[in-house]
Amino acid sequence: MGLIKGSCSITKFKVKEGEKPDESLAEYLESIARLGFTDIVENSDIASSHGWVNLMNNFSTDFSDNEFFKPPYVCLSLRRDTRSVPNKTLAQQCYDAEELIKKENDLEFLAKKHKKEIRDTIFNKLIRQAIPVSSYYDMTWDTENGTVLFTGTSPKISDMFSFLFKETFNLSLLPVYPYSMACDLSGEELIANIWPIDSLGGDL
Amino acid sequence: MDTIELLKEKEFLGNDFLLWLWFRSSTNQGDILDIELSLSKKIILKADDQKLFGTISCSGSGFKEARHALADGYKITSAGITITLDDEEVYSFTLDSMCLDISGLKCPRVVMDDDDDPDGLFYEKIGLISKVRDKVEHLFSSFIELRLSEDWGGEFEVLTAWVRAGKDL
Image 1 (spheres, rainbow over the protein chains, first blue to last red):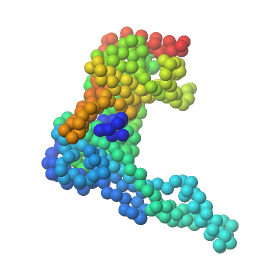
Image 2 (cartoon, chains in turn purple, brown):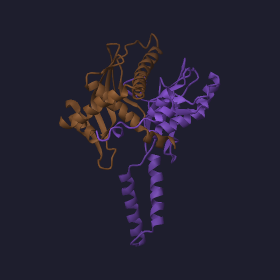
Image 3 (cartoon, one colour):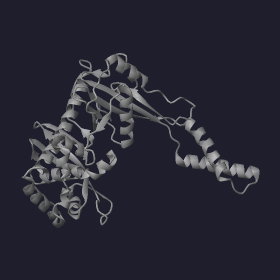
Image 4 (tube, rainbow over the protein chains, first blue to last red):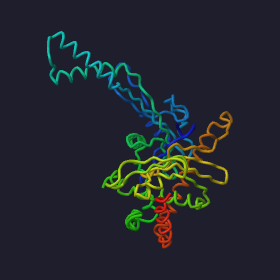
């Protein structure tokens, strides 16, 4: 579910006050391409990878036609690939390996350290075989008013996005939430005097 | 205080905003600032008190269970909302209290020929999404202005009476 097709979710950020985009399109292009998505290397034990892809075509990391800039918006998608090993599968394979070692060596128990070594070895073997699952999150940055809309709503993904945005454009993002909106509107001093509705009149 | 702590401490602003929207829409005052608004689909409430437990999720039939929970002191953490703009544009989405994040947003359908103007769909969709997000912020601004105005006293009385009446439903 992205910005263009179907339903979507929206988290809003603002570029930190005082920070202004001062780089040219060519410099942005260089940063975006540098931080573009790269596949997890096959047969590696890397569990995840993330980076920019083309918003209009999520399969493409070619930004050379400047399609990421639709004035006044910079628009990109964050792609994140993750590989994981199902807990039950890992537990079963660990159990089988431990039982085999115990039988072959005529042991009743295995040391905790040995069990951990077995687990790590099996995890590394299985993670290499796991197929990555891809997730896509779209973003638009209105370069005129500093508003950024992002389709990820989980704190973990939002943090990852803010970090990548900072790394790419050298601009900090601030989340927009009720308190910050209220302070922008009426000032922190007045907002500090607002109390929850139920604490004003005792029991509702 | 870091952002997460601040978000939690001031989440009541979002809780109270959703409560106000629900109150306004269910007392036939849904036409707020020329926006036709109603609560639809699902409301989720959370215990904000050690005497209360867990989360309540309620949908349909006038949200009676949610009204009871509200009267007992539960806080609204998310609400399904439908708004109509310019008499015919219908948007539905879920609004959360913590960050006023919008999820599951369904906008009016955009009919456009991609071959004629590949960027047209992008600009049209971004326009619709920005419009609904701006309206939510506009409603929130109106709520804050009302809370800080002399009119809040009267609004508060009617609102709290409406909340208490939920016990008798």
